[in-house]
Image (cartoon, rainbow, N blue to C red; front, side, top):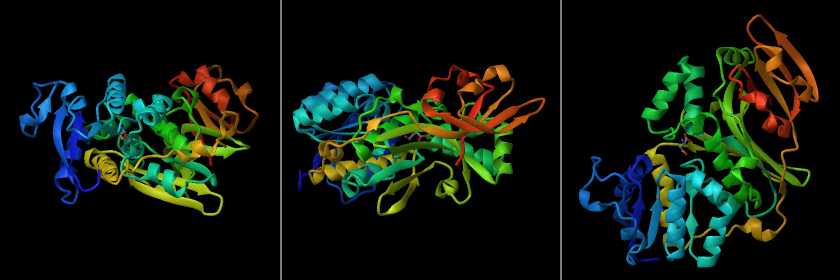
Length: 393
Ligand code: HSE
């Protein structure tokens, strides 16, 4: 596609779509222009000329002059339908839809191979941080041991406001929604589903392992209370929602869980909607990537970077899959956790390998102990609002 102007057909004109529009307008050096934007609601007032818009998806998908489809909508099934049709029609596709991608990774991989067209999705994981391309290009070997970090901007924003400004959870969440960081359904953020989708995507690019989102355990910050916050503060720590994948005895495990994070940890200083990713590799030890993980223009910048990469015929090669020594996924790993509850009948402490600290008061109780990740994933008792979990370093 070098030296030509590429015509973009965009699906969705919400926070990210508008962010991309702004970023494109301010980037003089890119040979790309928006030809059409497909939207759902024609009656909504839009900040740009109405001639851009259509409600007919085929005006993009079947227009031979449109080279690249940019998919930025909310609905998972509709997004998959658009992306797969576009790939089958021989169009390159850029997407930011982490849920759709995570849930359909194997099919999307297949579709790219069958149709020999690129599908790029840097914006889907950690927005402005170029993590997928780093995993694909720089870490194109099997020396990588772990990928972990903060990969949800909204929950990091909420936790920052709680710890740094003593804001209530509800006020902080409302701000995250107003700033365009949160998902349309914010439970996806606060219960840890959104970062899990990102971890599933990163896991494939880091290790070549396909995992379905439902295989990975996620627990968010929805049960956090003042007692937990005090527990963290008394230990000169903060709380961060962390996604983690790591090689372990020839396998790889992954999860998204709230962690107690001490000051020496690089993730401690990642604030607001910023994300931070730590990579661990055999000879480089730790490397740290930080950047805005949510918001229209931050995400739009990553989409722009993918569009620009297409001009140079870039595509993911999924080198780890081709290297053919991908680790198998497992939930069989021990974690040291803090488990807070109100009454003993709310939890099953027999599931623990060991308990090293126990606290009881007239209001809250907690234990610190070691438990298997699979046990946590299976624990129905974690659904009780009185029960909260934090991973300890
Ligand atoms: N809701 C997401 C977040 C948006 O807060 O990180 C970016 O993926």
